[in-house]
Length: 327
Image (cartoon, rainbow, N blue to C red; front, side):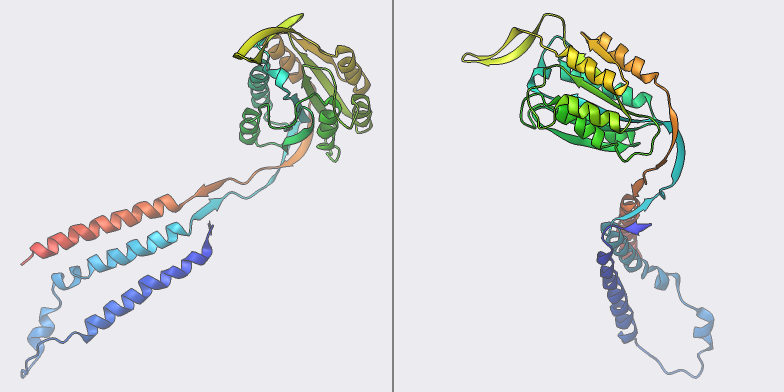
């Protein structure tokens, strides 16, 4: 067990000072006395139960105060990190988040469908280290390689359009994904690159990014997302938001070239079902053994201290009422 705010424990001096003051007052209190020839009757009488009980409310109050101080110092426990052997590969999901991903030829739209199916894919591969890269006019890492499925799923669900400059920088997205695993010692490293457009931005060309992936032994599976022909897009008009059919443009030749250079495959997803089938096919890829660090699990312990403190305060109140009613 450790404390999030250990410096607050110095407040435990407060109940100690209150106890010392209480004892001092008890000893200082003057009691009536009487001279007698023998103290034998008083020795045989002993202390009454009431003499002991009358100190209990104060003891309970001090216990509650001490427990509250311990609780606000936030005690926590954690399981130790340990290295474990697991079967798996390193996979980075590189996802296009340009505004064209809001097209509604998928249900409810391309981006939402891609996220939902990616979450299912993540859950089906508990032994792999996985990461997330998003790109539009530029790219960034949404989640580095990890085996923490809860974190991966939460960060995947947080992916949305509009957070970075619009456009389609396929080369930047792929280069960023490769950079996340270039130092990996896994025998099998894979990028699943999903896009619905044509490369029109970025400092790194898709061809250069593909060559970098090949150099580092990273296989790239490319997925072109979009119905054949036209797709309904939400657009803003002078009269407000509207949905209009627009031509679907996917550079399939480029995506096939990237996949071919790196030893991967190209897929075309025209609806939710087809996209799910593509992820299922990728899910059947070979696996290899790797060693990863498990994540420590933290557990807050302060609630139990707070509950015990509350019980002590309730008992103190009950005893105070009973003592007032005793003759």
